[in-house]
Each structure stands twice: as C-alpha cells, then as structure tokens.
Length: 179
Image (cartoon, one colour):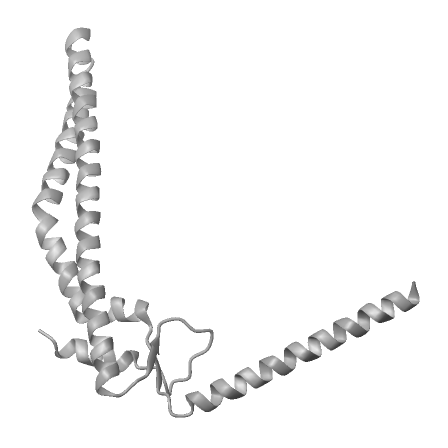
C-alpha cells in the first residue's frame, strides 16, 4: 500500500513538474511577443454613466414622457378626489349610488394601473434604444482612440488595472468634444 502511494505521488509530482515547465515556456514566449504590444483598458460602466451624451439622452427621454407622466398624475389626483368625496358623502347617499361610485373608483384605479404599466414598458423600451445608441457611440470612440494611439488591444474587464493603461478618461474627453 505504501509503495503504491509513493508511486502515485512520484507520478503526480512528475506530471505537475512537466505541466509547470510547459506553462513557463508558454509564458516566456507570450512575454517575448508582447514586449511591443500596447494594451489599454476602459471602464464601460463609467463611460456610460459619465458620457455627456448619456445625460442628453436622459433629458430627451424625460421631455418625451413628461406629458404622459403628467396625465397619469392627473388621473391619480382625480381618483383621490373621487375617494375623498365618496368618503365624505357616503352617509348621505343611498347604497346604490355609493356602490356605483365605488365601482367607478375601482375602474379608474385599474385604468391607472394599466396606463402606468404601459408607460413603464414604453419608457424602458425607449431607454434601451437610447442606451444602445450610446453604447455604439462609446465603442466607436474607443476604437478610434485605440487606432489613433496605436493600441494593439483594449479590454473592458480585468482583475487589476494599472493607471498607466487606463484610457477611460481619454475616451470621456473625446466624447465631450462630440456634438
């Protein structure tokens, strides 16, 4: 039993040693190939959040949906007024009238809920359209900057990034210069 364990251990050690040797040789070849390579990094979340075009798109959406939002607020206020009026006058009205008014209020609430859901869906659809446009623009600016500055590779995700290769600020500066 002891010999089989020792044999397995020896084979395992030899296999690991061989694997480490292959990895070291591979890394030295990659390192030699990359000595002249220029690598850049961009933070896509920061670019989308801080791009001036993002603020412009948000304002455009707010303007586009303002009248619809105002209409929903008006309907909400109307329902609250109807409820207050019913609560105030319920003791002096007959049961049939009170029931009719309660039904009207419930119908208005359902209408408001449907309208709010539709408005949210439409807003999300338009927001996604604007976000896609912004992402396309940001990507174009990154590629242009990379070509202008002779980068071989620009990455968006990394475990660690040195400030020396972070070009996010440079991309933001170019975005700020665009109309």
